[in-house]
Image 1 (tube, rainbow, N blue to C red):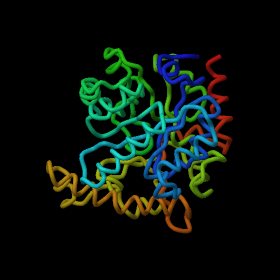
Image 2 (cartoon, rainbow, N blue to C red):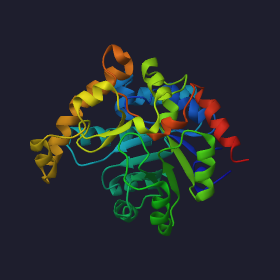
Image 3 (cartoon, one colour):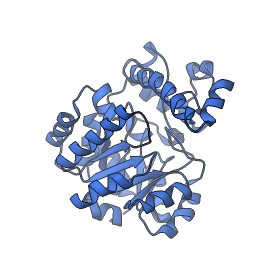
Length: 322
């Protein structure tokens, strides 16, 4: 099944392996692309977790597959040093001829202005029509519609609500969240989405390099085990409600809540949470419960019952469209 999204990128299956910190290792990204979908590189995961200088990491993935890949850029206004890193990653991605950029948490106009002349496609993560309108003004090619069943930073709306809100914009829409099996994939495509983004499902694969404890936690969890914690980044993040997460608590304290409401102080507070969490999530993904059971996942855990090859998943999902 070809869609506007898959035709623009020249891929066989309109299926994305979403960018995941800390789970997006090069072998996983490459395996999804090689099988006909498209894997997205998460720069911090590539460098900080998996130890690759960004350009060298992209070139390593290129040695594993010559199929299209993408790069994720989180462009929220933050420290000058981080923005410098984002600009450098963008420069390198364009120089390495990466055909897809997925932006998040900011105004993508400046990315589109750099990418469009090079023929690079830009999709933007959105959770509501409000943010989609702003990104549309910035010139994006389409939207990753993050719904209320997604892992990581989940939205508040269902996949159908997002489809109803955003279809009038006339851009291709990608369903992101809650899909763990081929039936859900086929249903989203029949509903009118131009593609689907999976995250949690691709963690439970042979190619994903996270600790087996993380994969087993996904297999054993049901959707009622997924909780939202404010203590990872300052905004709700979907995790498996393990004993460690329950002990930590899910809500920011009174002072943190007050700081998160301030126009300037919220960036400081989010940075404080994120700096702690980046290290914790990395260690948990590599050491499993030998460190702590802090595992990000979405409600698609309900349909994930076994560890498979990433390419097998792409082919299985593709067959559901026949």
